[in-house]
Image (cartoon, rainbow, N blue to C red; front, side):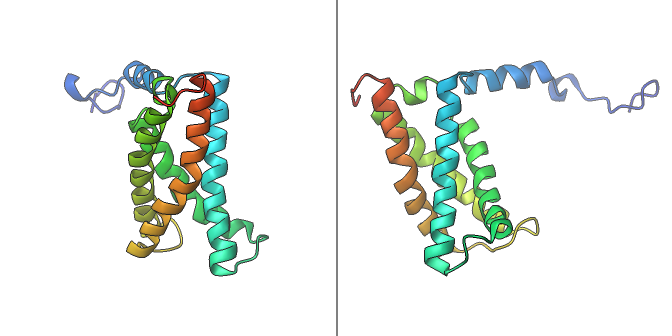
Amino acid sequence: MSIETGTPKFPAAFSPDMSTVTATLRKRVDRSGVTAILAAGDVVAIAAFVLIGAVYGHGESLTNVGRHAGTLAPFLLGWIVAAMLGSLYTTDARRSVVRAVSWTVPAWITAALIGQALRASSLFHGSFSPVFLGISVVAGLALLLPWRAAVAYWLGGGTLT
Protein backbone atom coordinates (compact mmCIF):
# COMPACT_ATOMS: atom_id res chain seq x y z
CA MET A 1 0.00 0.00 0.00
CA SER A 2 1.14 3.48 -0.72
CA ILE A 3 1.27 5.44 2.53
CA GLU A 4 0.44 8.72 0.79
CA THR A 5 -2.70 7.58 -1.05
CA GLY A 6 -3.80 4.41 0.73
CA THR A 7 -4.07 2.63 -2.65
CA PRO A 8 -2.46 -0.70 -3.45
CA LYS A 9 0.99 -0.47 -4.98
CA PHE A 10 1.42 -3.01 -7.79
CA PRO A 11 4.73 -4.03 -9.30
CA ALA A 12 5.06 -2.54 -12.79
CA ALA A 13 4.46 -5.94 -14.45
CA PHE A 14 1.10 -6.31 -12.63
CA SER A 15 -0.08 -2.74 -12.69
CA PRO A 16 -3.67 -2.52 -13.97
CA ASP A 17 -3.48 -0.07 -16.86
CA MET A 18 -6.92 0.92 -18.17
CA SER A 19 -5.45 2.18 -21.43
CA THR A 20 -4.14 -1.34 -22.10
CA VAL A 21 -7.51 -2.89 -21.25
CA THR A 22 -9.29 -0.37 -23.48
CA ALA A 23 -6.86 -0.97 -26.34
CA THR A 24 -7.33 -4.73 -26.05
CA LEU A 25 -11.12 -4.39 -26.11
CA ARG A 26 -10.95 -2.10 -29.13
CA LYS A 27 -9.00 -4.80 -30.98
CA ARG A 28 -11.65 -7.38 -30.08
CA VAL A 29 -14.75 -5.34 -30.88
CA ASP A 30 -15.48 -3.49 -34.08
CA ARG A 31 -17.55 -0.55 -32.90
CA SER A 32 -20.14 -0.32 -35.65
CA GLY A 33 -23.84 -0.68 -36.31
CA VAL A 34 -23.23 -4.08 -37.88
CA THR A 35 -21.58 -5.30 -34.68
CA ALA A 36 -24.51 -4.00 -32.63
CA ILE A 37 -26.97 -5.87 -34.85
CA LEU A 38 -24.84 -9.02 -34.69
CA ALA A 39 -24.67 -8.82 -30.89
CA ALA A 40 -28.43 -8.24 -30.64
CA GLY A 41 -29.03 -11.28 -32.82
CA ASP A 42 -26.72 -13.33 -30.62
CA VAL A 43 -28.70 -12.30 -27.54
CA VAL A 44 -31.97 -13.23 -29.30
CA ALA A 45 -30.57 -16.64 -30.29
CA ILE A 46 -29.31 -17.38 -26.77
CA ALA A 47 -32.58 -16.16 -25.22
CA ALA A 48 -34.51 -18.37 -27.66
CA PHE A 49 -32.40 -21.34 -26.58
CA VAL A 50 -33.29 -20.69 -22.93
CA LEU A 51 -36.99 -20.01 -23.55
CA ILE A 52 -37.53 -22.97 -25.88
CA GLY A 53 -35.91 -25.26 -23.34
CA ALA A 54 -37.86 -23.85 -20.41
CA VAL A 55 -41.27 -23.77 -22.08
CA TYR A 56 -41.16 -26.84 -24.33
CA GLY A 57 -38.59 -28.93 -22.50
CA HIS A 58 -39.73 -28.28 -18.94
CA GLY A 59 -43.30 -27.05 -19.35
CA GLU A 60 -42.62 -23.76 -17.61
CA SER A 61 -44.84 -20.75 -18.17
CA LEU A 62 -43.54 -18.09 -20.51
CA THR A 63 -44.66 -15.52 -17.94
CA ASN A 64 -42.08 -16.72 -15.39
CA VAL A 65 -39.77 -13.90 -16.46
CA GLY A 66 -37.57 -13.85 -13.36
CA ARG A 67 -36.76 -17.54 -13.60
CA HIS A 68 -36.03 -17.26 -17.33
CA ALA A 69 -33.76 -14.27 -16.74
CA GLY A 70 -31.94 -16.24 -14.05
CA THR A 71 -31.42 -19.09 -16.49
CA LEU A 72 -30.36 -16.77 -19.32
CA ALA A 73 -27.85 -14.69 -17.31
CA PRO A 74 -25.08 -17.30 -16.88
CA PHE A 75 -25.18 -18.19 -20.58
CA LEU A 76 -25.06 -14.54 -21.62
CA LEU A 77 -22.14 -13.93 -19.27
CA GLY A 78 -20.40 -16.98 -20.68
CA TRP A 79 -21.05 -15.73 -24.22
CA ILE A 80 -19.66 -12.28 -23.45
CA VAL A 81 -16.45 -13.78 -22.05
CA ALA A 82 -16.06 -16.31 -24.87
CA ALA A 83 -16.92 -13.78 -27.59
CA MET A 84 -14.37 -11.30 -26.24
CA LEU A 85 -11.67 -13.95 -25.91
CA GLY A 86 -12.43 -15.26 -29.40
CA SER A 87 -12.73 -11.80 -31.01
CA LEU A 88 -16.18 -12.69 -32.36
CA TYR A 89 -17.19 -9.06 -32.74
CA THR A 90 -14.39 -8.11 -35.13
CA THR A 91 -14.80 -7.67 -38.87
CA ASP A 92 -12.38 -10.56 -39.34
CA ALA A 93 -14.72 -12.94 -37.48
CA ARG A 94 -17.50 -12.32 -39.99
CA ARG A 95 -15.55 -11.94 -43.23
CA SER A 96 -16.70 -15.35 -44.51
CA VAL A 97 -19.22 -18.02 -43.61
CA VAL A 98 -16.47 -20.56 -42.94
CA ARG A 99 -14.70 -18.15 -40.61
CA ALA A 100 -17.92 -17.21 -38.80
CA VAL A 101 -18.85 -20.85 -38.23
CA SER A 102 -15.35 -22.00 -37.27
CA TRP A 103 -15.01 -19.20 -34.71
CA THR A 104 -18.54 -19.51 -33.31
CA VAL A 105 -18.35 -23.24 -32.50
CA PRO A 106 -15.50 -23.07 -29.94
CA ALA A 107 -16.84 -19.80 -28.54
CA TRP A 108 -20.28 -21.29 -27.86
CA ILE A 109 -18.78 -24.46 -26.35
CA THR A 110 -16.75 -22.21 -24.04
CA ALA A 111 -19.81 -20.08 -23.26
CA ALA A 112 -21.88 -23.17 -22.43
CA LEU A 113 -19.15 -24.44 -20.12
CA ILE A 114 -18.95 -21.07 -18.38
CA GLY A 115 -22.76 -20.94 -18.16
CA GLN A 116 -22.89 -24.40 -16.61
CA ALA A 117 -20.13 -23.53 -14.14
CA LEU A 118 -22.00 -20.39 -13.11
CA ARG A 119 -25.21 -22.38 -12.69
CA ALA A 120 -23.31 -24.70 -10.33
CA SER A 121 -22.32 -21.70 -8.19
CA SER A 122 -24.45 -20.07 -5.53
CA LEU A 123 -24.91 -17.03 -7.80
CA PHE A 124 -27.53 -18.61 -10.07
CA HIS A 125 -30.18 -21.30 -9.84
CA GLY A 126 -29.48 -24.65 -11.41
CA SER A 127 -26.56 -27.00 -11.30
CA PHE A 128 -23.88 -28.43 -13.54
CA SER A 129 -25.26 -31.23 -15.65
CA PRO A 130 -23.23 -33.00 -18.34
CA VAL A 131 -26.48 -33.86 -20.15
CA PHE A 132 -27.64 -30.24 -20.11
CA LEU A 133 -24.17 -29.16 -21.22
CA GLY A 134 -24.50 -31.37 -24.30
CA ILE A 135 -28.00 -30.08 -24.98
CA SER A 136 -26.80 -26.51 -24.47
CA VAL A 137 -23.98 -26.92 -26.98
CA VAL A 138 -26.15 -28.53 -29.67
CA ALA A 139 -29.22 -26.30 -29.22
CA GLY A 140 -27.17 -23.12 -28.89
CA LEU A 141 -25.20 -23.89 -32.03
CA ALA A 142 -28.42 -24.75 -33.89
CA LEU A 143 -29.57 -21.18 -33.22
CA LEU A 144 -26.29 -19.24 -33.35
CA LEU A 145 -24.69 -20.82 -36.41
CA PRO A 146 -27.42 -20.03 -38.97
CA TRP A 147 -27.64 -16.46 -37.68
CA ARG A 148 -23.91 -15.82 -37.76
CA ALA A 149 -23.48 -17.65 -41.08
CA ALA A 150 -26.26 -15.56 -42.65
CA VAL A 151 -24.66 -12.32 -41.45
CA ALA A 152 -21.26 -13.39 -42.78
CA TYR A 153 -22.80 -14.46 -46.10
CA TRP A 154 -24.59 -11.14 -46.44
CA LEU A 155 -21.55 -9.06 -45.48
CA GLY A 156 -19.18 -11.19 -47.56
CA GLY A 157 -21.16 -10.54 -50.74
CA GLY A 158 -22.59 -14.04 -50.95
CA THR A 159 -19.37 -16.03 -50.65
CA LEU A 160 -18.70 -18.95 -48.33
CA THR A 161 -14.93 -18.68 -47.94
